[in-house]
Amino acid sequence: MLRIHFTDRDLARVRVAAAPDPLWETVLAMQKLALDGIPAFARWRRRVREDLRERDARAAVRFLQAIAPPARYFPDFLTPAESADGLKAGLTALRGTPSDRLGREVGLMAQHRRLPGWTHRLAAGAGAALDQVAEALETAHDTLIAPQWTIVRTQVDTDRALRSRLAGENGTLGLLDSLRPAFRWEAPVLTARYPVDRDLHLRGRGIRLVPSYFCWDTPVALADDDLPPVLVFPVSHEHEPAPLPKHLATLLGRTRAAVLYSVAGFPTSGELADRLGISAAAVSRHTTVLRDAGLITSRRHGAVVLHNLTPVGAALLG
Image (tube, rainbow, N blue to C red; front, side, top):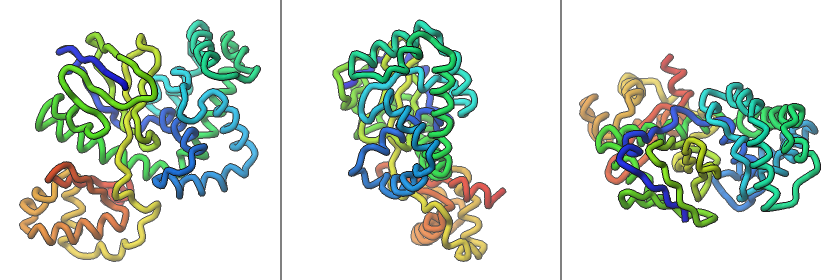
């Protein structure tokens, strides 16, 4: 079990990532690529395995899987905090990882499994070895993540909109409680099923919550308790949009266009009905068409259904 211990100061410093983290998504996607039996990733895995016939991409993924195998420990330097500002910023930070940290984290990997010989150069802080890791991560991102980015962004944005709304209505305690059933909030401890038994004491530093498309089943936290606390957790794959919209012709009509414009404000179904002066049944009918067209997503939380634009829907509205 993972037990995250909060103080009053920590509760005031909980924040939700503004967008998907490209390096977290890349590392977690590499792990999921090697794990069959997860239906949510079946279509993505088939597409990626076709793309991996290209030699450079296949070599990059195999190279990285040596230090980030599925469902096992991987070093924290692969997912620097700067990745929140984009792939380029993340890779720049990774290339600047201090040599003492590299030695410590490679040493921790060696306690869990046999490592390839090139990791000795990495542990010694060799710049060429770090460059090789960064280049492989960029190649893996371009193959595994970039073609899927619209869907990744849509699902993460939908989850973030839900968390932000709950935080606005019920404060941080409501936000933490909304993480059920994967987490259990019993003040002052947030608990989740985890591969190892671990206590993480925030000590007034707060925590950054990172909704992730390629995180699955259990959350992931940084292994080093001295780093700024991060908790990566899985988003729902329910009502996942199709990669390409198929029913744009059905969008013609004033009421449906008004629904699409109104969804830009992250409303609930009830708010849409009140705002547009239409029935709940009409809202359901129009949002179903928009969802089938890949223009919005919908997420149920208790009795509330929250709607959000996909990137395609946002682009259509300009």
